[in-house]
Image (cartoon, rainbow, N blue to C red):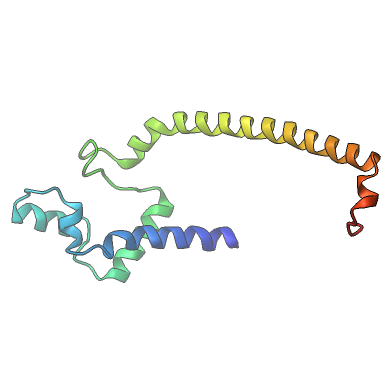
Length: 134
């Protein structure tokens, strides 16, 4: 349940990020130097002329269906899912290496900490410094 709430909060924050910027959303998202006709076409195409709640509903629906739209700044016209797919294996490689390193370092430090605690307990340190029993 918490995962769903967290994902919805992140999606809401991401959605509202461009809406709280000063100025028109179309001016922020659409490339500079575009003609008024192009701006109007892209505003209609991306639904930026719809009420905010309708835009949010479309955003949530498209996000959960995996339709991330088309890129307007990075490889214009290319589906965003294709762009993300190109870099997914590199991301997974970095996550895998990071996870393996975290486990290795955690095991080494955990073993060292446990060993030191037992050594201190055997030396009588526990008797001289009061700790609550666990």
